[in-house]
Length: 473
Image (tube, rainbow, N blue to C red; front, side):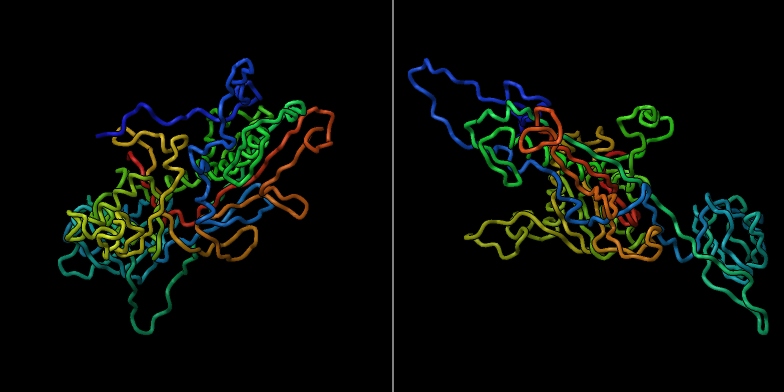
């Protein structure tokens, strides 16, 4: 039977912008003969309500002193073109091949190199030697090794890659050389702010219910709880902003906010945006079979082939992986050797898995952000839920990149946060108190204001090694 909608979980916020009567317990009636028995301590019915932890597990934080973070990532070592055509008809001994791949300014093919040419549709292929090259026009002449000549038609769409070279005795060396090509990426930090304010008069109101927060703060003053919850909420936003941020597109409503002196107008490139743009995307929700994972592994083979990977998943995806792995056991249908394979009648049955190996090592970790109903956990799933994220595969370890600021190669985690800082100003996590209440003596405002600020962005290195699991193509 499905879980019923009513009664459900509460989504209304526990905080208000200003102190209201709802912030206080008002059920005081001293004309009653009997006063109510009360519990002194607030009951924590939602457990740990914070969602931040993802970046602390997989990344690091590093200072930066610029409005722009730039880095270079290695390109491919070998050259392959996938949108080519031949000027010759089938059975021709020679041909002129035209390279029409996008973003190719000068073809990296030289005279004397040997190439493999194949028809993308049929797989028919030839091997040949390059006899002439016109880099400006993006063409090269090839002579085929096969006596039967060209095996494919002149209208075929071709792929070409270099596998070696051949020269006669006593000839000069290779004509021309190749320059390494790096891909340059950048991101810019955004400023994140929050504030909590309480008047001096309200601070004098002592509550009689003991309150606690997730970071261990306790007390009998309601404003103390609100201040700590503001801090926890801000810390969550420091992570979720790095996950969800998107750049402001030209002509968008945000981009037109240049005249607004208060709100930002540029955005930033968050993790989901980057992986959607230049990473790998599984568009079918949750992969539920080994065949599904085999297709993902096949894609990883074509990327960086990182040996160890962590999949951060929502609850449904976690169960799907457990069920898939359990089905590989001959006793899985009866549940007798699920999870821990030494289960007996005196121990609790473990119905879950922490990871598996199939070509690569995959470790599974629940991601609270994807389960929390006040965040992404409340989004719809299924075919109608285009864009709903169910998981993210993150490569473990670090990678080498050329850091434009440092001017040298550096080891960096695949995911890390850069925050704005200098010798005199550190904007990683700023907090300060203003006003004239609560110990502050900075202005004549009869209140205490706790201010929070951070300026940061996330760098997603080697996005081609990440896999985003979501619904929708």
